[in-house]
Image (cartoon, rainbow, N blue to C red):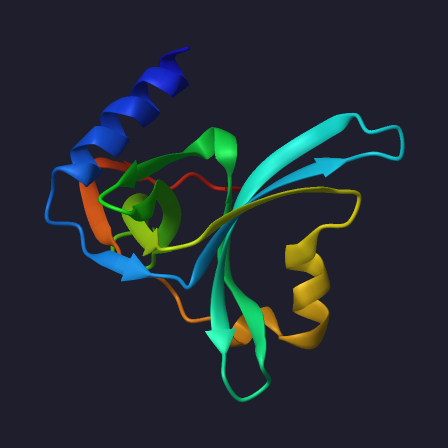
Length: 145
């Protein structure tokens, strides 16, 4: 419950802040199911159109329990945080991320589209999202994290 409250507070602070808004061509709300149709987990996948190959490629993803999707003024905005390690500071920090797209799709499949796309488009070539460091959540790194 405390984690949910912290996420809601964080999402509202990112939404009202000067955190840069990045762009994706499409956001997919994907629900992973087993062979019996039972839900295993859900995620948001941000897709970017690749003109050279004529297909969408994954730009990033986040579990839906760790994010918030807002629809306003004809646009979908995905808000979440990403944990990053800072070598100079020797600490883990949270970065607020906001991604906007015009299209939202919903899928329920036994195949993870992000993992499938990684076979044809290596994840090392994904462009990172712009973010804003949220210093008040920064914590010193612990050995083994």
